[in-house]
Length: 359
Image 1: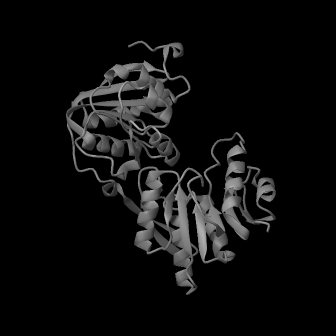
Image 2: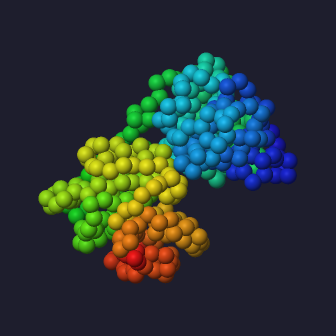
Image 3: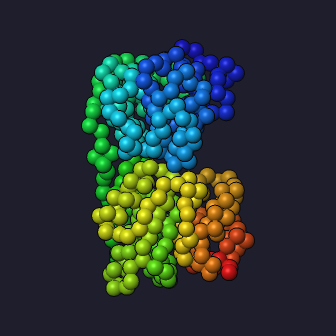
């Protein structure tokens, strides 16, 4: 089919993939499931309601506000009932490995002879993703190209009940300062190549200059590496072991962090939240490798919001320790929102900051 101009696409302002689906909403029928929703604003635009799943905690909260839809958070939500949906829409995830897992979830939710629709942008790798789609649905064909996206459809897909996200968990090892912990992984969450350089530098400062608290919060905890490592390091030194709570926005990270903690017998609660919006409480120490260092354009708005939120959850006199790309203007912002700040370690790529909240 010919590519369409942007002007005739509904849902302007939505992600391109969501706009492309709206242009092809005639494909939607029966009981509908949307997997990997990036914006809740698509729901009122659709002709029928159904299930809407997002692995992003903030998007999930927005989905919950639409009462005619069944909102689900990630891959192990109790609302994901197998053999229940006639049309399955899979939005292409960022990680190619995650697409295989998302397609497996879709097939477990599908009724006999259901329709499967895959939507994704060219820049996200939809061309390569078609091979993965055809591996489970050889009959798939392209329906449309619109808004730099492709829409593919497979009729009468073969359902495959029995999906369990924990069947997709793999294990790796993270080591720093002679302390090793086993870390759970799901597609896009944990690299089996080991620790990233920023987290390694952060852990090294925690070994050289330990935090003094019986309770900590790890913001953007990922697979739970920092919390598990801190407690393993304290056990090895026969010190009092701190409880380390964790928070992350992505469902796979929350699942992995809980698995990592369980295997390490680490203490602490893992929360799902977009930032700290859904979190109550005060901590004497907050640690973070915040996810604000991609790209070359410097945008301090997310950092400022993060630091303002952190201050509300940091006890007076409490410590914030974080690692960030060295080129980002963290130091002045930390001083403005938290208090006195120092650099514990730095190189050309990363800097570890330590700051204490004023009284």
